[in-house]
Image 1 (cartoon, rainbow, N blue to C red):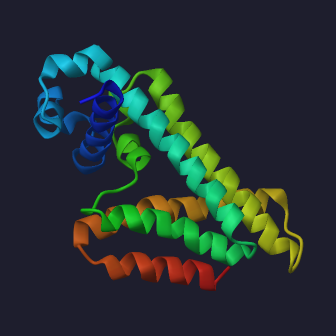
Image 2 (cartoon, rainbow, N blue to C red; image 1 turned 90 degrees about the horizontal axis):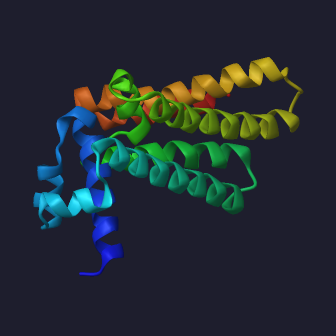
Length: 188
């Protein structure tokens, strides 16, 4: 097995375990078992759990920004962009009832050093800014809206995207997510 493949498997399994169990809910032994390597091999790539989590977070953030870029490229209609945005979160939820990596990490924010906290926050800032831009596109076709109102509305959309999966995860009722998103977009 080549190094890049092993590294990527470690990152993928680490991401899966954080999304499923949280930062405090997994160990290097869990990753080693799933990847099929010894714990020492993980330490070769990531001497500490902090470094592993940081790498997982950076990859997740980069991939998510790429997904937003793809949405921008695929759709001209702001409402379709918003639907695609919410579908990203829905897809994660459909994958073994996982939630957004950063949502899970935000729930355990006190477990992380300041640098990781800043990276988690930056994920949310980038999401809110993207939403604000899409909402501005939507409002430009109808009636102008104040920048403050756009920021508040973007934060509301982000709160639904982040919070609705938590409710679904506890109830097992995936229709709740779809209903909340439909309600939000209908009242846009």
